[in-house]
Each structure stands twice: as C-alpha cells, then as structure tokens.
Image (cartoon, rainbow, N blue to C red; front, side):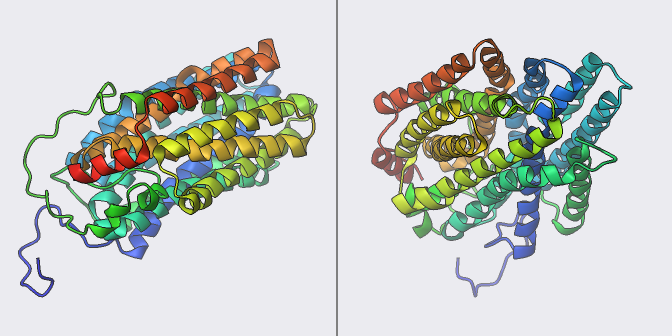
Length: 454
C-alpha cells in the first residue's frame, strides 16, 4: 500500500508501523520490574529460610504450586490476549505480581517476627506466591505479542531486542538491589515490599499511557530472544510485508506440546530447563554452606546477591554479545550452551571461596544464556508466523514447567550429598547435548523452512 494513498477508516486493530519510544519504554518496564523482583526474591529467600529454621528443601517446595500454575495458565493467557487485548493481559499480570509480592512480604515479616509458626509461614507464602504463577504469567506473552503484532519485519529485530534486554537487565538489577533493600524496619522482606510499590507505579503508567487494544487476530511476530532475530533468520529483516495475512480468517489450529515440529525442542527445553532450575535452586544454599554463613543470614543475602548478579551479567554477555558476534543459530547455541553450563557447574561445585564460586556460576550462566535463546528461537522457527502468539505461551509454559519440582529435587539431592545434586545437573546438560546432536535440525535447514513457510 502506498504511503501517500488516502487512509481508510481505522480497523478494529490498527497495524502500527512502529511503537512510539514512550510506549516501548513502558513495555520495557513491565518486563523489567517482574524480572528484577523475582531475582531479588531469589537473593533473600535462602537467608529467610535459615532465619525461620526450616529445611532448605521446604523453601524450594514453596515455589512448586506457583510454577505449576504458570505452566497451566501461560498458554491460556497467550490465547486470551489475541481476543481480549494485550494491554488487559499486561494489567492482569502486573496485578498478580503486585498482590503476590505484597502478600509474600507481609507473611514473611510476620513469620520472621515470630507471630506465625514456620509451617504456617511457608504455607501462606506458597499461597501468596501462587498469585504470580496464576496471574503474573499473563504479562510476558502479552508484551511479546504486543510488540510482534505492531512492528513490521524490518523493525521487529530491534523491537524484540529491547524486550529481551529488559528481562535480562532485570535479572542483573534484582540481585544488585536486594541487599540495599534490607532495611532495619523491614529486614529481609524489604525487597518484596519495595518491588510491590514499583509494580503499582508501572501499573498506573500502563493504565494511563498505553492505548486500549482489542486484537482480532493472533500475534504475528517473533517471540524468540532478540539476538536470534538477526543471526538465525537473516531474511526477516528484508520482508516488510506485514499485512500479508491480516485478512486471513482461516482458524489457527491449537498448538500442542507434542506437535511433531516442536517435539525435539520441547525435550531440549524441559531437560535444560530442569538443569538450570536445579542450579538456581541449589546456589543460594550452597553459598551459605561453603562460606559458612548459616549463622549470619544477612551477610549471606549479600554474597548470594553478588553471585547471582555476576551470573545474570554473564547471561547478558551471551545474549547481547556472543550470539550476534558468532552468529550462532538455535542448534549451535543450545549445544554450546550446555557444554559451558556443565563446565561452570563443575568449577563452582569444587570451589570454597566467593571468587571461584562466582567465576564458576558465571560460566554456567553464560552457558544457560546461550542455551535458553537457542531453545526459544528453535521453537519459534519450527512453526509458522501465524502461530507465533501461541508459541509464546508454549515456551513460557515449558520454562515454567522446569520450576515445578526441579529446584526442590535439586536441593533434596544436594542435602543428601552435595555432589549428587551437581552430578544430576551435569547429566541433564549432557542429555540436551545428545538430543541436539541427534535430533535437532541443523540451523540452515530450520531457517530455510521457516522462510518458505512465511
């Protein structure tokens, strides 16, 4: 359509040629605050569990119900956003995040003050945390779909890069801020309350600044981690005919985990996701043990924050630097990532001071930083463009599935014998490497098929 031609009346869902910077900044903040809040929580929960005097495995199990709800609800919210509007789903996600963090903070504060028994504290914490799994899972697929459906192919690479970087940046900011938010009056629950307040501010801005939308078609943009947009699918940037299927009313089949196109990627996602979830589940308790900080939970929170922050920085290095620089495709990135993750786990498992622990965990995080976008990109390239809204929910669901029971299993194995937990993690990583070697399609074939399908 010529740009100087008379414009028809606005359709129910206008296909904008770009997203204004102010709106993109708001979408950036939606992802940033949820990522930063959750990683800040990971920094303080091992120390909170130590102060409550409960076994480490029970702290890990407190996340299980929330993770299960994420698996169930993420695809539902992704489909619902195609009909009810992405803004509405983002608001639901933020409300779930705010309510969960505020209630979790209050419950833990009462528990640490001795007003609640440890058992009831954990049970109520798990119930409050489930609000994030059930409702917070609405936000990420909605943000991805909003950006994908409102940017032409020529601009989608940069737009998705911004969204991916917001989540990655949040994983660095959260652990960095967590020790600073442990105030004398709130103690270790300070990060919960502060991020709940930040979430309220973002929700108000979302309500006031983002226009209402009511989509009548599925999101049609890549939901892969941004660095792959350039290297894994070079043709994407050349095709600006975004309206080519806007009038296509053919029903989109429901995308299932067992789809033959997705099966090897789903296996890789589940195995590698469980390895990463076990690593994150163990690391906080491992630091407290190796650095002999069980008697000083406050200092433990600071050390855990340092290690998690460095690990998140290594993840960003992989996604922002190594993947585009080396032009790694989904299969190569997945396999190299698992090899590095194995090496990193072995290094920090054998360490007994903060510096080598930090180095080993950073190498492992570098590996996971290569693996995670590889899995996401491979799953996205395996399906058609009209199925991108659904694949966003499927990927989010697979990512959540890893956190249903894997952290608790990892901590339980670690509690029996430290090397039992670490050996299991390495075995999972090597299993993904084998799956990639035998069953994942070569990157060139995957990209070519995706371009033909579009």
